[in-house]
Image (cartoon, rainbow, N blue to C red; front, side, top):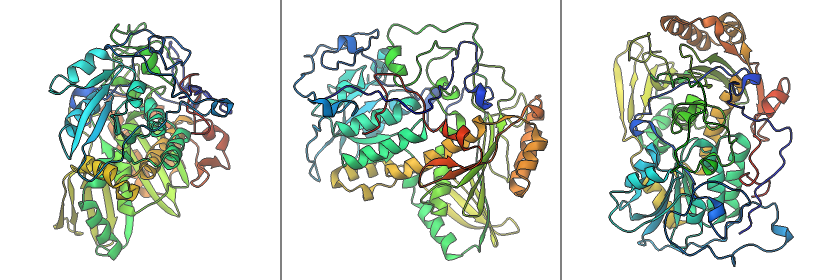
Length: 549
């Protein structure tokens, strides 16, 4: 394997230094959000990756130092598999494939990378189910890794540094449930190592690395599934067919939403110390290694731009993927404008807790509406809009469909339910992945990585459109979106909710309208330079995704 991961990105932009300076402030980023995990994430921690220091890991040769030590006795990695010659330089951390060809009944040997809420859950989702077996686990937090694997009765390999797992010949596939900034880099390395990949949403932290991941999947002929499990819920296909057939008449409006209730992540007066059982250098990986300016290292990274993507990147990929699935989109919209902010919480968060993005694709406009404040201060109920709190409301000539995780229903113009859509919340999504690992057919996947890339990209576009904005207030937001009634109604609903949480809606941020070329995957026209700066970020040397995967 070769270990030169660095590249020199044009016009790099850092996500921000958290030492008392708000990251993303130059792009109008408002403060951030907080504490609850999504319903399928136990108790709040969806984190994890890497850990063991390459300084103590013979054979990795990455040329950087970090604290930590090997967590189990083993022989050093052999150097015989390093790629030789100058042609390998700059090609990325490349592993030669080590997997076997699987038969229809062969056990699929799985490694879990990241053991937070989602990763810890995946230990149970994959072990002993659908002909899969968990044989290895990785997390930079050694204590958490040990805790999440206590119930596994058979012997497994445990490494803080996930790259050791990629060198294991008895691993066929990896499940990546790390913080967002590691999703794409880890997936690319896994593809290079000849492993199949199940990667959690969002599949990437920036649009450029997301496309690099798709390229890696194609180049190394890997089976790569995005963790947007609702793609495996059969009711969506039935709903899509009914809409296509004209059962409810022409589609007039679609509102995509996820309204949660979270809380402040608190505010620290100085850096939070990192426990010795966590290798923080590897936890940061490609992202900036700055002091931890939040109370909790785990999970609350979601709400700081260096490592997370806010609620738009947390729940957003689920509801946006549902939207794209229902409407049968194979690309993303060509324009976006966004407004919102972080209200009611004076905390260390940066991402918006009230976020509206108005997209337009081929003349059809769609609002994506993500919120984390309660309907009113002091309450626990989420705000309802169009009689829904998530995921999609589809208004047709003949009625309205409200659908979400696990099912939905269609109603006539008088509000009477005329059809129920029963679903299973995508419970066979992991089985779909394991089956495709055996078949070797990417077309068998319900959320093949190109699908995951497109849905993640739409959410990242919404974030970019917000981050290039500045404080403007609701009046200017109304003016900017005046041609779409649903957007205006959404802004009114947000203003009402902000006031009910005893904050000033005049602090609302507004970005300029951005035009996006879905084929070139870059912004064009007015304000393009601002948006294009955020298509990628400057990754740390030794961890950066290469130009050529």
